[in-house]
Length: 373
Image 1: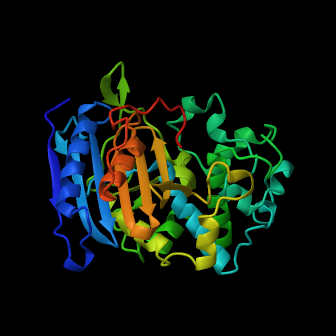
Image 2 (image 1 turned 60 degrees about the vertical axis):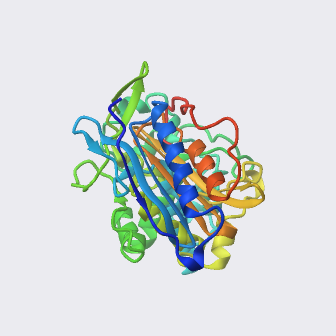
C-alpha cells in the first residue's frame, strides 16, 4: 500500500445543533477509525459522511481512489453503491403507489404479462421485501463468466425462466437481486421511460444529487473512484463488471455527501408519503425475522432505531445508515470488494452517539463475495 493520505473537511458545529459528544470529538474518533481501517489493508480508500439534522459533522476520505494514477480520495470521490441502489428503486415504486399508478398488492403479471406463468402471481410487495420466491439470476452458476457483457433486463432474467421457484410466494424470505430488476422493469413499463432517465428526473435533479447517477463505463464521471480487489493479500484491479447487469438492483454510483442528502430527504418525508414510508420501514410476514422492509433493514443500536442497507459489487462496497431519533446519517463507501464498511459504519455510529467502542474493533475484512448485493 502507498503512504496514506487523508482529506478531511471539519465543519464547525452550529450552535443550535451542538450535542455531546462534540463534533471535534467525533472527528477525532472517526479519523482514528478510518486510518485503522485503511491500515488493515482491505481497501485502498474509504469516504465517510456524518450529518446530524442535515448539518455536516464529517465529510472526508482516506487513502487512494486510484492507485495507479496516485489520486487521493476526497469527499467528492464517486463510488459504486451496489445494493444501496435498491433504496432508490423501492422509493420510486412507492412514489408510483402514492400516485395511484402502481398497486402494491397487485400481481406483477399485471405490469409484466410476458413473465413466466409461475412468476406472474407474485405481488409488487413480495418483490420489495424479497419474499417472492423468484429465482435469482446472480445465482446461476455460469453468470460470473458473463460479467463483462452489456445486457438488457430481459436478457439478464431469461436464463432463469425455466428454473423452478425457490418457494411459494410470500412463504419465505430470500435476498433476491432479480426482484429489484423486475421492479425497475415495472417502473419503465408504468412511466414509459428508461429507468436511468426516470431516476435522474425523479431523484437526482429535484433532490440536488448532482454526483449520483448510473455508473456506466462509457460516461465521463468526474472524480470516479477505481475499484479493486485482493488476490493473496495483494491489491489488484477488480474484474470488469458491466453495471448494465446490476440495473435497478445495483447500478448507481454516488458520493458520501449526496447519500447524506438522500438520507435526510427519504427519512424526513421529502420523498414518499408517511403511509408509504411506514411500509418501507416495517418488516412483516416472512421478511419480519430478517428485519427487512423495502430496501431498508430495521435494527437498533443502544436503544436507538437504526435503518440501514449496504451493498457490494465488483470493486466496491458500501454502508448507508440512519438513526431516526437523532436524524443521524452515516455513509461509508469503499473501493474494494473485500472492505467491510458495515463494521466501520457501526463503530462510527457508536462514536457519533457517544457510546464506547464495541469489540471487536474494525480490523477484519469482508469475506469474498461471488455476487453483487
